Amino acid sequence: MKIFITFIGLIISIHSYSQNLIQDLELKVLKAQYDSAIVVADQILEVDSLNWQAYYYLGKSYQAKYKYFDALDALELANVLDSGNMIIENTLAATYDAIGKDEDAINIYYNQYLRDSTKIEPIVNLSNIFRKMHEYGSAVFYYRKASEIDPQNFYYYKQQGYCISKMNMPAIPAIYAYETAIRLNPYDLGMYQQLANLYNSTRNFAKAINVSNKGLENFKDDKQLLKIKAYAYYLNKDFDSSILVFNKLLELGDSSSFNFKYKGFVYFEKKQFVNSINELETAFELDKNDAEVCFYLGSAFGRSGNGKDGIYYLKESKSLLSPLPKELYNIYSEMANVYLNQGEYDLSLKYLKLAYKNKAIPILSFKMGQLYDYYLDDKKMAIDCYEAYISLANVPDSAELEQGDSDKSFFVDSKILGNSKERIRLLEEELFFEGAKKE
Image: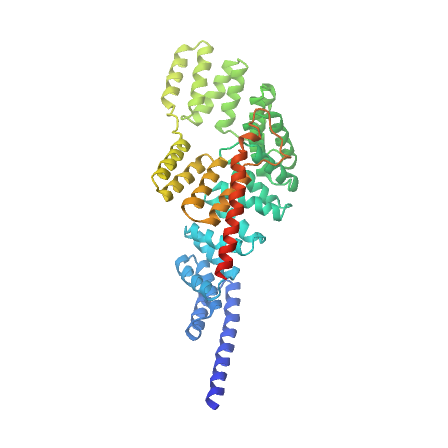
């Protein structure tokens, strides 16, 4: 009996000692005394080798000192000892992210998402890491889920706009996202710049000018917005207004080649070739690799009667032109089909993803879903891909279609849409019964 009491007392003593040290350890980490924290954590682990808190704070300390692999060892042990602890998981995922193990970080966030699909933190973490990896389609999918949970947060719409604009698809969904973000937060300069550029890209120059003006109300004399506005006036053939804004930029000290280039183009359009030459010569001095400037400079010289210089610059522009880039989307998509026919399903998926990076059309999400569904036996990823297709294939009804853009039929194939929904229903049923069977 005495031995038992002594044993219990020893355990209580060790626990009390460890807890005191844990409090000291936590305090040192909070004060950024990482070297001392590492020493204390080691002391705790000598006595209590299964103390997850000691491993966690040890990992945090190594992480703060940029010793990521030491941090990884400690945090992985902490995660094993206290699995499901989101604080540990997030720190571990951040460490994976720092050393380039993106897939491991994604697995952590995805498992958190599966545990509770209404919790926004893992959804945003998934969005951000996919955006960092340039997996823009997946990023948009999760940012949209975040918007559903918190529809008043401008950040999620802003990032949707950014990612969609990188996906080589019609600009309407990106425009809708940025417009929503600006309504929620009118004080983000970058969103005005991005939205105005998108309107220019869709040839809606009046709206590009309007957005620029709204941004300039909050950010007076912002040079980037002024450039976009001047460029929009040029594209809209309001040449006098364009010159006024370019002159304003030069007054503000912005002597970039862009301003001289497009001011020169404006004068060229007005058939004021001598003025055009003056601007374009300056632009070419600033960037001697700009074939477009070189071409217009040669044309301006030729049209002003200086044939010798005109021929020189026209020949020079020809030598500056590079061959057209290969159509990588078509190549990768075709390679994916070949590998599928050969039964090389992992390689087929790899090249579908590469095709998606070059041209993120919704049908590729559906094809990836089919691969996961029928050939790779990954029901959860198949569901994600099918849901991504459905999400990307639908433009919000409130988004206005701009003149000259494709209509909604570009996004939607009713048969594929129906097939996607049916496969999601069946796969979710299968996952449910698999889970019940395990229980």
